[in-house]
Image 1 (spheres, rainbow, N blue to C red):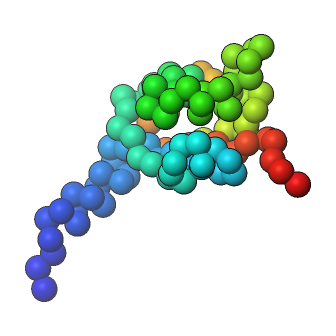
Image 2: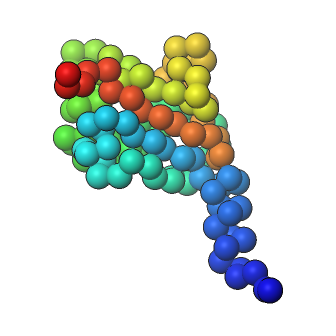
Length: 111
């Protein structure tokens, strides 16, 4: 059976060209997706990626993620890069590359 060319392309795009971004909790509702892929320049900082997400997902998402006084998304969420919390890496200056998975987990939630 012959493989469809688009299947091979999709598989290579998933791992070689894109960053996977996952949203948990109420951030899923604000982003309107639980997961997305984004093509970014290798070595972009997490901070720059966040600003791209703010433009892409809108002001309401930005307000929910960024602490109003400190202007830091780590105030309102845990951010993981490949399963590691960014404070054990380089914080918002952590370099992001294709194939990485970035996860945003809100620290506030209903109970």
